[in-house]
Length: 80
Image (cartoon, rainbow, N blue to C red):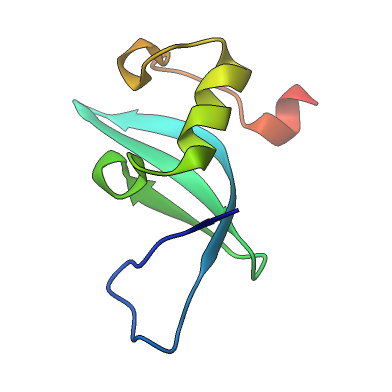
Protein backbone atom coordinates (compact mmCIF):
# COMPACT_ATOMS: atom_id res chain seq x y z
CA UNK A 1 0.00 0.00 0.00
CA UNK A 2 1.14 3.54 -0.71
CA UNK A 3 0.58 6.54 1.52
CA UNK A 4 0.11 9.83 -0.27
CA UNK A 5 -0.79 13.26 1.05
CA UNK A 6 -3.32 14.95 -1.24
CA UNK A 7 -3.11 18.16 0.83
CA UNK A 8 -5.27 16.65 3.54
CA UNK A 9 -4.92 17.67 7.20
CA UNK A 10 -1.96 16.01 8.95
CA UNK A 11 -4.23 13.76 11.00
CA UNK A 12 -6.01 12.40 7.89
CA UNK A 13 -3.98 9.78 6.03
CA UNK A 14 -5.52 7.98 3.10
CA UNK A 15 -3.75 4.86 1.91
CA UNK A 16 -3.82 3.90 -1.77
CA UNK A 17 -4.84 0.26 -2.19
CA UNK A 18 -4.77 0.07 -5.98
CA UNK A 19 -5.18 1.96 -9.23
CA UNK A 20 -8.23 0.39 -10.84
CA UNK A 21 -8.47 2.19 -14.17
CA UNK A 22 -7.31 5.19 -16.15
CA UNK A 23 -8.83 7.70 -18.52
CA UNK A 24 -7.52 10.31 -20.88
CA UNK A 25 -9.16 13.72 -20.92
CA UNK A 26 -7.57 15.23 -23.99
CA UNK A 27 -3.85 15.21 -23.14
CA UNK A 28 -4.46 14.78 -19.40
CA UNK A 29 -4.28 11.35 -17.78
CA UNK A 30 -6.21 10.43 -14.64
CA UNK A 31 -6.27 7.26 -12.57
CA UNK A 32 -9.12 5.77 -10.60
CA UNK A 33 -7.64 5.35 -7.12
CA UNK A 34 -9.10 2.85 -4.65
CA UNK A 35 -8.37 3.96 -1.10
CA UNK A 36 -8.05 1.93 2.11
CA UNK A 37 -11.42 3.42 3.13
CA UNK A 38 -13.13 1.71 0.19
CA UNK A 39 -13.69 5.04 -1.55
CA UNK A 40 -12.58 5.64 -5.13
CA UNK A 41 -11.59 8.94 -6.68
CA UNK A 42 -10.12 10.09 -9.97
CA UNK A 43 -6.68 11.63 -9.45
CA UNK A 44 -4.36 13.31 -11.97
CA UNK A 45 -1.15 11.68 -13.15
CA UNK A 46 0.92 14.24 -11.24
CA UNK A 47 -0.54 12.97 -7.96
CA UNK A 48 0.14 9.31 -8.84
CA UNK A 49 3.59 9.42 -10.47
CA UNK A 50 5.50 8.39 -7.33
CA UNK A 51 3.14 5.61 -6.24
CA UNK A 52 4.19 1.96 -6.31
CA UNK A 53 0.56 1.32 -7.26
CA UNK A 54 1.28 3.01 -10.62
CA UNK A 55 4.12 0.57 -11.25
CA UNK A 56 1.80 -2.35 -10.45
CA UNK A 57 -0.91 -0.93 -12.73
CA UNK A 58 1.51 -0.49 -15.63
CA UNK A 59 2.74 -4.07 -15.18
CA UNK A 60 -0.85 -5.33 -15.15
CA UNK A 61 -1.54 -3.40 -18.35
CA UNK A 62 1.67 -4.75 -19.96
CA UNK A 63 3.18 -1.27 -20.29
CA UNK A 64 6.53 0.16 -19.27
CA UNK A 65 5.51 3.83 -19.24
CA UNK A 66 2.26 5.69 -18.62
CA UNK A 67 2.48 7.30 -22.09
CA UNK A 68 1.79 3.84 -23.58
CA UNK A 69 -1.59 3.48 -21.84
CA UNK A 70 -4.44 3.12 -24.33
CA UNK A 71 -6.92 5.94 -24.79
CA UNK A 72 -9.84 3.59 -24.10
CA UNK A 73 -9.74 0.96 -21.37
CA UNK A 74 -12.18 -1.24 -19.52
CA UNK A 75 -12.10 -1.03 -15.74
CA UNK A 76 -10.08 -3.67 -13.96
CA UNK A 77 -13.24 -5.13 -12.43
CA UNK A 78 -14.63 -5.69 -15.94
CA UNK A 79 -11.41 -7.47 -16.99
CA UNK A 80 -11.65 -10.06 -14.19
